[in-house]
Image (cartoon, rainbow, N blue to C red):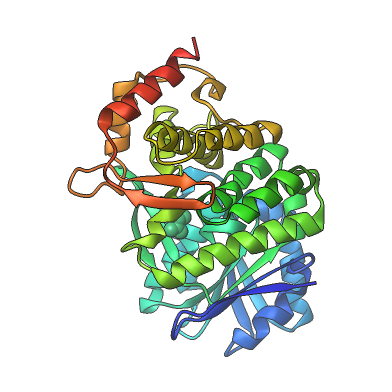
Length: 371
Ligand code: GLY
């Protein structure tokens, strides 16, 4: 069964289709978008080895011609050199304004290809075929595209909505358990930021989803995408509410920097730890019930996920340095740190009013518990 979540942005409406076997029928799904039977696909070498043949066969079945570019896998691809290579390849392939580009991959490919589509001939349409859980529930939906700069992550980019998103639940079977759980960090984030009933559901069904249950996975992806679509509709360019999607991210970005964006800490793992810290901070500031941070941590622990600084291997800098790294977050406005805090599970809000000492104390205690 295919679930459809509509993203009805005026003039740029699109569907996120979620279900098993979507890659194998991608030709039929994409065909109605095409003005001529031809697409350009951009993927990475790892994803292409696992899934490109299925996509190509699906396009062949509909008589859609295709060519593919395989970029190196990994975050380092998301910069000017591979972006230039991608844009020039699309031009060499004579992709025209009315054509469609397909991004087949995780967050790096989706962001880079979306940005290439945004600037190619001043904007061509693109279809996201996200192959990681993180990309299915977050980065493929909502139109944030871009690349990293030497000065920081995601500093160069554009809002450019996809023409369609095909989230095939079957492709999640090829993820490692660690990558699945990292993506699950973003799923938990949705429950925590705006839907207590979804968090209840995750407590009851998260383990089943991690074990591979297709129905549980499809529901977790669908509910996450529904929530993201709702927020993007209210605030496409992040003037306000869209910042709620950054629950856990202020802590996460500092921890990612401190660990050198290495596999010591995957982005979704940092989000999970960041969510636990945001709830702990909210409770200490008297904003949310005292039992909420324990409940958040208990679920993350039950899933076998990282939830404390103690769960990060290797050295970490001191609390002051971590706080400084938070100050370099791109969401800082007028030098004020912005946090997403919570009044309870499913009830988050954006604030700049967080006493520096409260954050510092929390980090110091967490770091001391690593000793
Ligand atoms: N990943 C956060 C956003 O799309 O706004």
